[in-house]
Image (spheres, rainbow, N blue to C red):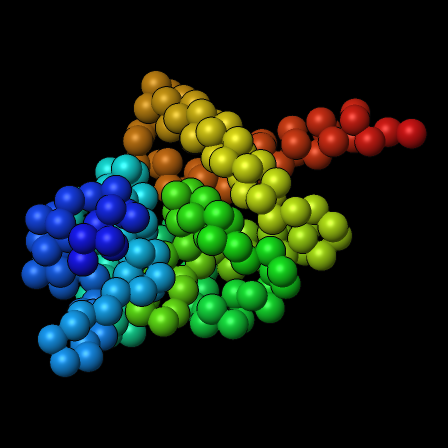
Length: 204
């Protein structure tokens, strides 16, 4: 337990608290010895990433319970309507098949920090099928997964600003409740501007 806590950058007391709350699965026991492994470390990194994103421990506990009961992860992550993103449940082997040779501990930690991945015991949940498919396609084209994830982090920063701009615009000139209904308009503006920007850079 002390080794796991040190690797995760938390105290043993915090680790015990997480275990008592059911946030991490119980260790494998051999007699009086309790063994923790990489799955426990991945779960702790997921908890840290969710806490950094503003989730509460109660919310994380609900998410963990959803994983273990097979409930709809998208609902727990508040990815229901109007989102178009579909979470994907994968085994470690299936994840490795998507990114052959690129699923390193460093890349897994980065994906967890970005919130792209969460762990569910032996399984992994990717937050978006579209992001999973696009990332895998870029890796197949020869782009290292580490570079894809780094670019994803930069894109996240920009789209957060765009989302703030859109919601601020509606808050000033329209009923805030219209934000959900008018969401496709914001997407269309971003897609059109990105298309034009790519045209300017890729023009022969």
